[in-house]
Image (cartoon, rainbow, N blue to C red; front, side):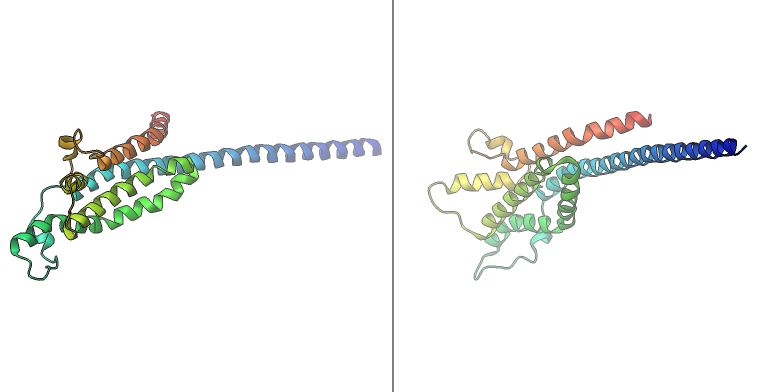
Length: 213
């Protein structure tokens, strides 16, 4: 009888041990699956956000670089000593470009804040794509500042002016690309940014959508 009780107790201990191992094993697998799902959800969220911002970039730069402007946009532009109305008005559209860039500060902040999260999931090389937008904005700002505040002089002044105007006016580079080196340096960076973000993010979004369907 004693041996039987011992055997039963031993058996139940083994069963309990096996059950504990099984619970731990399946619990670990469940946790690993949950962790993978959470990581994938985060990848999808960031991919959607990045792609949306990439498309917004086209709209934002389109608005900044629009050739349409009005006197209201440069009504607060300081006049130079003795500056005539015509000269002041000629500088106005370039001043308007600078104000438009500033008015879109929040958008550029969103891009800057997204970059480290994008890097964490896609790698530092992928995050380098964001430099394209910063470079495009820098070209627009510097060119608008030069055209607004600094007279261009020298034998290549006209070509420099054309290059800067290609930076700040959307679509102008198409007319001068054969004559002015790097006339499309803003356009090409914006296009590369959208294309590369699409290449990274679109497969993740499409795969997720296919699973849901």
